Image 1 (cartoon, rainbow, N blue to C red):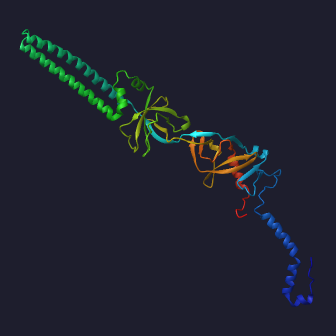
Image 2: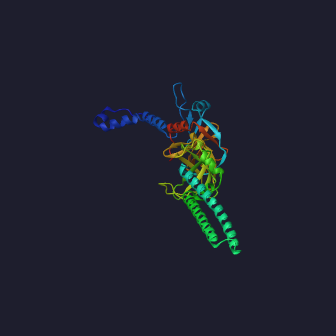
Image 3: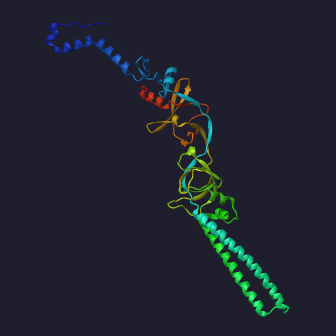
Length: 364
């Protein structure tokens, strides 16, 4: 290295020359400083320094070419509570959520009593009319053989007509009650009510069966194959019990804009007037993977999961299609391949460690 010596005569007359000489003489030191700063600030230096005794940061390194991956040693993995589980293929049936209530069966009971009463009256009137008709036929035969008088025949005809009118009236009353039941409750429930000693009605009256009216959201229809749904008064899917389809409800519930259906349940928690939440299968189902709720974390409005690609090496994946399920979330498609090791505990710790790690420059 050549250093320029000061010439007092030259520098005294030319101050600029003096400054230039100083800069040239200090170039080696400046170059070393620039190189040191470049090394410190280089975006390619992405490996954490070795953890010291008082350093609580995770021992994580990120590859320059794979900046969405992290590598942890066993001690850090255990300290962060990272646990994995092998993903298994699952078939998931999507569901729509509907709401309804436990029906107060007092009006149903009143209608049942009315149907039974009119049925009994019609039965008695029919029997009485049949006897009157037989008596009139005998009276006509006696009158034909001049054994009975015309007045006796006319009296018997009057009795026959009265009994016939009473029978027709009883029939009309029973039919009116039956039509009213059909308008309010539909054919199936009305058929139950119209049966003598109906087992289903007895179970409804004793509380063994609970009648539910479920209202679907607008523009939704109950598939013909649906014969069972899940319901819960607290709206918790995991605590739900099954309810069996009865029929479509002829009248929509107050305030409901969708179709309405009757179901029967044996859930002892249900009381008349209670609101219930219902889960109804929709569509043909999908194939994917089921993950626990703790496996999914949020970052910048995106859903992430972490997969252990090799021992101690983790990478995040963005999940775009997932559906809440009783076991957590159902991930459709090929976002997670069955057989992969998915982080089921400690995903939030991995996300925090990744956010603290220096990020790879996309231009390099």
